[in-house]
Length: 201
Length: 201
DNA sequence: CCTGTTACTTACTGGACGGTAACTTATGGT
DNA sequence: ACCATAAGTTACCGTCCAGTAAGTAACAGG
Image (cartoon, rainbow over all chains, first blue to last red; front, side, top):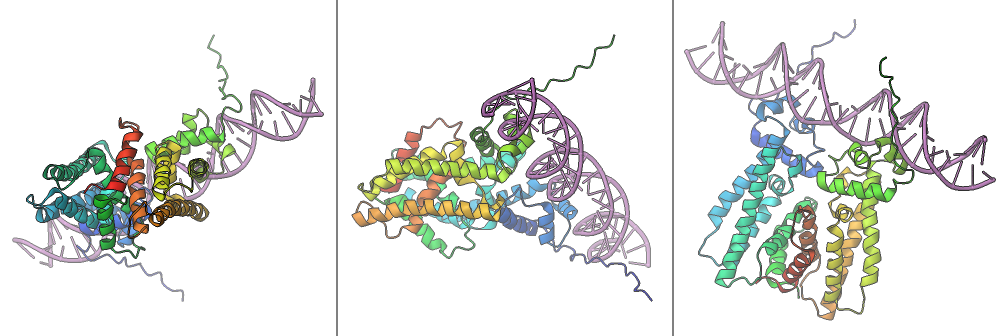
């Protein structure tokens, strides 16, 4: 007697076990590991043990997932900087606090999407929102540098390129394969801060 | 009398008007503008007024084009650094010479591919060759910094993270939309060098 | 126990894209 | 003048992938 073909019982994930946050975490991880373009929705769904169309229950499209990652990182950054920052500090101190948090954020998968997201893959609206975010972030650092120049804790003839220089230094960390790296965040931060404030000359 | 269907005379590009260099220039430009993944071979061919299969006459595949850009930039860099560098200089001076050339190179389309190429799109072999290139580049700068520490023209407690910091600062320029930027290379270079050597404290 | 909503599923579509096969035309050497 | 080769062409394939249509299981409230 041939084995009767048993109707396959699809194992559904527990109801409610999938949510936006979980999708964002998984997506951010994969976007960072493989790159946005080469991460397919099937990849993400597979990693979550669900199917691609299920993702569309939670997000309208792929870009929405990316933007959700970006803006959730930004939300966290803003909350946390509001907590840590103090306008009575010197500009220099405020720059340090800013950069410390910045480094913390961008060395996590969700955070790295905030700086490595490629606006060229985005819709017009997404690109605008993203570029606004970046502009505000830029102004936040440059503002603190200017405050430092005013209060005498920082000495630079110019702040725009200085800001770019500093952001470049930190942002590039997003390109490191830091999961493998053994170097601690503290060491990186201390060294970067030393280069920025003391120079190497 | 109906218009006779005229056999369309395909306008072929002049023989020999297409060569590897031209393909590389066009590709590098488009890779930089749109990103490697979103630049199709049809895009490149179209920009050159040829067809996609023609590209395969000159290159084995898409990756070969990217690698050709990367290594041609590297070749140029090595030639030019050999010309400009002088081991009798101080380490500091040698770092400056190195970074000056580095900035020049990475602000051109072909050059930017050297730092923005994503090794995750590459084959195993391509990735190895590319990572070797990056490692050698890294050692070249770190070596000069070490020389500076030895001869007293540079003061740092550690060279590895310092090297990363500096490369990050410069590499990130590749992410700028510098075609639109009005800021001159000289200004960028001077400001960056000042941050690196003098600090902002 | 019924029923509506939530949260998934299977099955599919349409377009894009890297790459290939086979053919054609221009040119330089003999 | 002929031909081999270089440098293109047209037409096509297979795969991948974002997104969709339609169906179904699980749970909550009544």
